[in-house]
Length: 110
Image 1 (tube, rainbow, N blue to C red):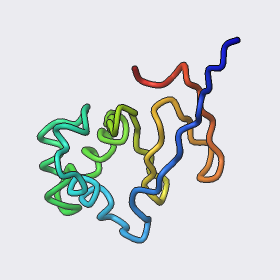
Image 2 (image 1 turned 45 degrees about the horizontal axis):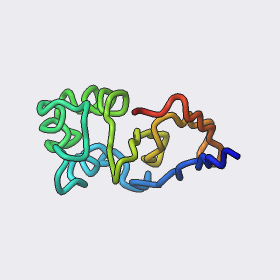
Image 3 (image 1 turned 135 degrees about the vertical axis):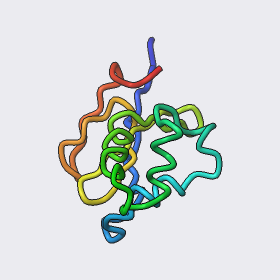
């Protein structure tokens, strides 16, 4: 008998929308060792985000991070999604709304 269990990873509120335009900057500063835990983000984009919202390429860099960043935590890969709040969702999760997610394990990063 095959007893494989597939568990839907949880969605996590990373940063509240109360941070407003500082969410990208605060995201960039939220890692102790981002080289170990985050891939898909260039050093230039990190530097721009750390500078804050007055940098002329701040929102372009943030868009790139939201599209490309992959966060790894204890062997599980995650993506970030911002629609007001910044959420961490398991790779392979399509966010339908804050309260409704669809998870397809075949889409998860290996």
